[in-house]
Image (cartoon, rainbow, N blue to C red; front, side, top):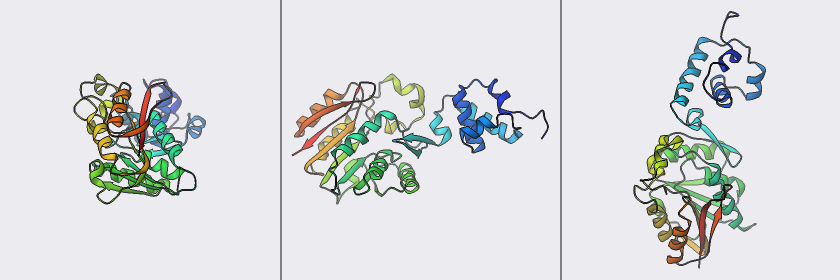
Amino acid sequence: MTDTAPQLRGLAGRSPLPRLEFQMLWQKVLGVPRVWLLAHDTDPLSPDQVARFHELEARRLAGEPMAYILGEREFFGRMFRVSPAVLIPRPETELLVEIALQLLAPGRAAKVLDLGTGSGAIAVSIALERPDARVYATDLSDEALALARSNAQSLGARVEFLRGNWYDALPDHEDFDVIVSNPPYIAVSDQHLARGDVRFEPAGALTDGGDGLAALTDIVRGAGARLGAGGALFMEHGWDQAAAVRGLLASAGFSRIASHRDLAGIERVTGGFYN
């Protein structure tokens, strides 16, 4: 390695990426924490390392989400593995976890169901915060379930994963205390599907192919047969769907129906109790 070998400091000035993304990609290439990177920005780099960085840089410049390039995303204070087979966990979905935890009475081994678990972020987070709870999670995708199981194992969470479409995955399970879900709720005509990170995420986890209410409707209609007395169902939904979801819950016999706002002030999670 010669004194003319490339260094991070020199490459940073030539990369079109934002500085933070530049550093995150180099952390991925070198397998080092950020503090190491900052302290070694004049160390020589090998041609293979530079080539690997440029591969990742090209993917990012093409619009691919950082979470897929890095293979992970933080959620509820923990790192979860992600891939293009699942949605990228988002901060607003943490609200659904917070609500579920508030619903679980202390000292009681509650039974919780996460429908359409994807990466497992919701189910695993609940299981880790309440290790006394019996947590179940379903998904129709084998790839998603494999990733969710991997996340549960690496983080030390007890979750039973089942394959199937919504309640079809649970032929012998009922009397849940809490059911939660972040189903596909974006209308197929929504222009956001063609923008940003969403372009790279699995379409089936984003939209029902119609008005965005089909999955929400199916989950509400099937919940009564799966909930125990006084059990609760809460779901994430689109920014303009809170009123429609409240109507679905009321028509299905739910009471104490409420919508909760995320940090942006948007009604993001709606649910109620089944008597």
